[in-house]
Image 1: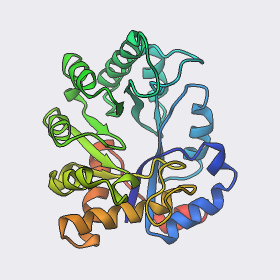
Image 2: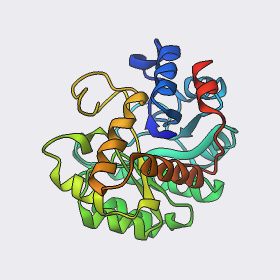
Image 3: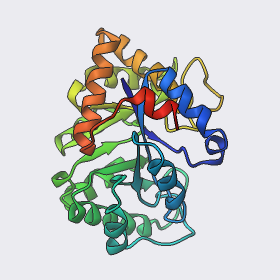
Image 4: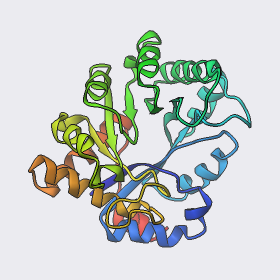
Length: 265
């Protein structure tokens, strides 16, 4: 079994065809998925999906790119994280690529998420882009290693990956690792400890080869896993088992019979 550790099933590109999306997941051996939050306003839609399917899990958070909408506070995040299907806080972090200017508000929001994670005991889902130094510094300052989490859709360098692992975090790779020119990223995926790896789609974005440039969906996470298994020169089944075990341990979940659960949804 494989797990898509980060996707957005509530986004309009996927939610309108959700039963078929779930059936294709099951048909491709993808037995579970985590739907990450990006705004508080979208959380009810995520929870509706997760509550209707045992192996779909949720995270609550406000994406660092989000400038409008409800601003999270620690108590609100803790209260929402008490829902039985919410297994993580996020996605949260820093993004200096899309936004410029004084981004102190991003750093304040990031600290709010980390405090909520520590107090709720839920791991963090980290988004970082063009902000690796500040991301790692704030995680260290706020004691995020107490709960750990995952650097999702990892695209940074080897040093950042190892610093994340030393902090107690996992590293998740998306379809980008299948791109022909992603040589540095492939090298990182081949080197890191197997017990700290996850795979994801970030669907509906970043479809892997051979679907690059098209709509992405959780069923395609097997292409990511196949590529990393190839890079590491291990059997696909071994890699799939390891990353699924990592997911269950990190997010403290137990998976059910995935074929029946997803196909019937």
